[in-house]
Image (cartoon, rainbow, N blue to C red):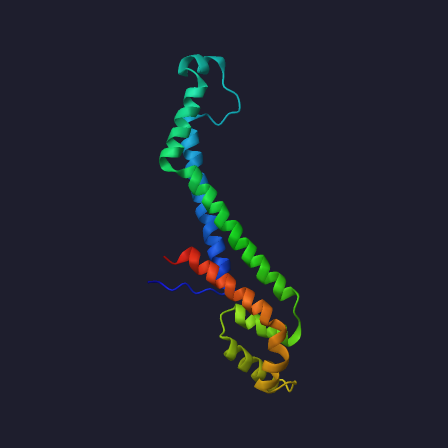
Length: 167
């Protein structure tokens, strides 16, 4: 079983990949449409009499789309893209609401760093730059509780994405 790694960068890559997949589906739909209809906006009278009723073409077009299940696939793809976009915006919003140590800590977590490791990295950055707090316990006691809600939201987003991509 493939494990899906969910961090902000991968989430954004999944979003871009799904946008590309939607584009491919829509191009396929357009290719089928062009088989049945000219790209001009109006049909001349001679074309209508020569080819028969344009409703027949539309029916054939719709039958082919249904046979390929393309309309349903496009709808599902758009729903997936909307979900991914919502998750990205939610993480962006949470990041925008944080500052200082809380921001750095949450930023590391959403970019795939384990929570404990993120705390250690923030402490080591503070030590290196002669900033306070420079102990792990202070970060855990004072700063982590203020981002705990955002971390829990991110964990729930990770679970939702895994449901979408893992069998």
